[in-house]
Length: 255
Image (cartoon, rainbow, N blue to C red; front, side, top):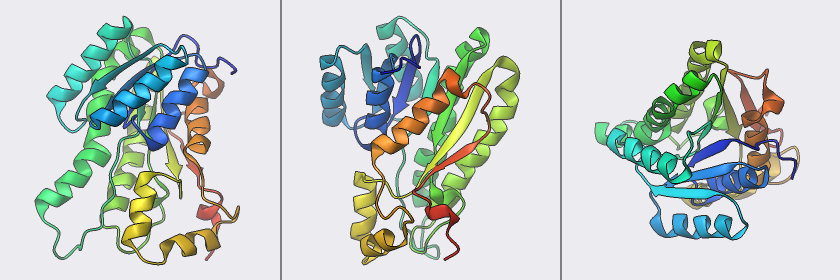
């Protein structure tokens, strides 16, 4: 433990499992109070109990990041429970998509963008004013390697994640004058439930992925959490508007 997030209040969406859970655990290890949001009630309860058992200061709220009323209520509950404003937001919640672009309905399109893009906007909007007033804060958006490189069969996931990176750049410029930083992290293949869903959906992808990674392995949620917590911390005080790849070198391959 280095304590690089001491005195911070870190809110993580999609915190019940996977990358979100790993970020929450690491943030607590680094001295932060952690606030957890997810729609998965049982998993959220388990993660909250796990963190509380370590002595961490933790609060949790079941919330739907695609609904502005739910977002407002969840953030209000968390700040009331912790008695402090949110100083770091990690927009982690997301969903995969495997749509046929010729057959995808408008409702299905909206479902993807609601979670992968609009939710990050709604959460950011809800916590930004206290950060601006305090002239202190950081937002880290969990994007994806798909924001710049993608594969067939995952329409329109790349479009949503590209939008999230674009939002990161735009928001970073608008709030920089208040000493609020906004960055993105783009994981590659990370061993999560979403990755297993991807491997199960597209035959042969698991073997293909292992074969093309320069480091020869799939990443872990903890690998991503380390980068997220660095970007959220004062150690990254001169980093904003950036998109950091955590992909085992996959994104630099020619073929």
